[in-house]
Structures are given as structure tokens and as C-alpha cells.
Length: 214
Image (cartoon, rainbow, N blue to C red; front, side, top):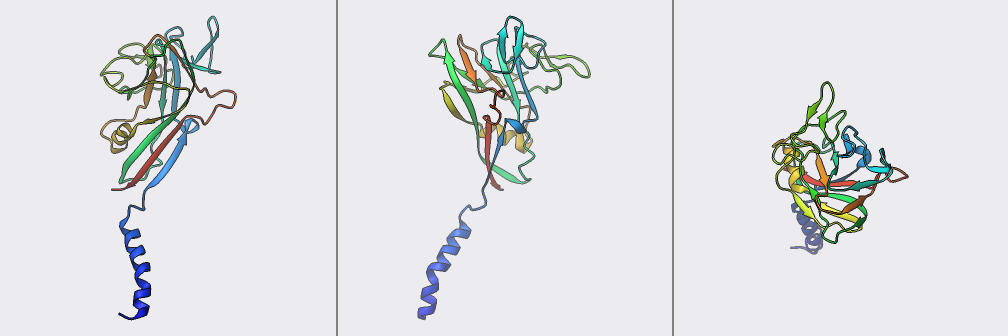
């Protein structure tokens, strides 16, 4: 082999290994500003869709987002940004937790929603238009009907929590189950304050998805 061919060998090897490596993976990042369904529900305000924080008796708003055992957050991201015929390799939900009150054993529960929900969603109803349709159990807590029986149980810590939701996104993207999003709940005797959307808080909830061609 001539010296010219030997000098080209490292370049050829780099090109060959580069072509063989999985170089087609792409990652997209979506924030709460790109959700298509979002609601904060509470048993104390059974007909409200934005009951994130009770600033005074009977006065509710979304200036803060406090999760108690009788409250919940519903959130859904569309997946139409992912092209067809892809394989989901990783999906992570990055959520802001400001702090936790009252119980060192507090737990944050993340389960897939099974029931369709929409306009007028609240603690009592999963939709009110064109007619009211109740949850099987108020607060979207029907195991196996409103939400999956099992999900992730996490110990909340202040700061950004990164939660692996690859299985959920795979199921939704593949069409095995319909994408109704997640209900976030706190079933323990504590309060978890999660980053709200008011006062410049938009964009703190993030869904990061990595995919590659099948």
C-alpha cells in the first residue's frame, strides 16, 4: 500500500465508525408553555379548574401551587413534534419543587391518566362541556379507571427534580394507549409546594424527549 493510502486510513476509519455510531438521535425540550391541557384541582373548590392556592378562605388562584392530599395537578404535553417512525430512547420530566412542609416522609405520586378530560375539568368532573362527566372517583383518583393503579412514588426535594417518564411517553407515542397526560398528587400528610406559573414562573416545567429512527 502506498504512503498516500496509509495516510488516508485514519480518515476512513473515523468516517466508518462515525457512520456506524448512533448519530441520528435528537432531543427536544418542551415547557409548560407548550402544554395543551393543564389544570389544578382541589376538593375544597370542587368546581374550579385553577385551584392551586387558597390565598384567603374561599379565594383561589394560581399564584402558588400547593399539593395536599386533597389536591392535584393535571398536565398534558402534545407529542406531535416527534416525527413518525421514531423510537423513544429517553423521556424526562423536570419539575420545580420550591419546598416541602410537614413531613419528612412526603411522597410525590406520578401516574398516567386513563380518562379523557377537558373544558371545565375540576375535582368533581373530568369535563363539563358539552355536558358534565364525572370522574369515577373525585379528584381523578379512580385506580384503574381515572388513572393507572401503579405509578412512580418519589421523595420530593427542593430544587429541580428529574423524573424518568420514558415508559409513559413510549406508550403514548406508539399509540398503545391514548395520551391523557399525568395527574400529580400528594397522598401523604404534608404539603409540597411546586413551582407555579405566575410571577415569571412560566417555563419551569420541562419535558425532555430523546428519540432516534426505528
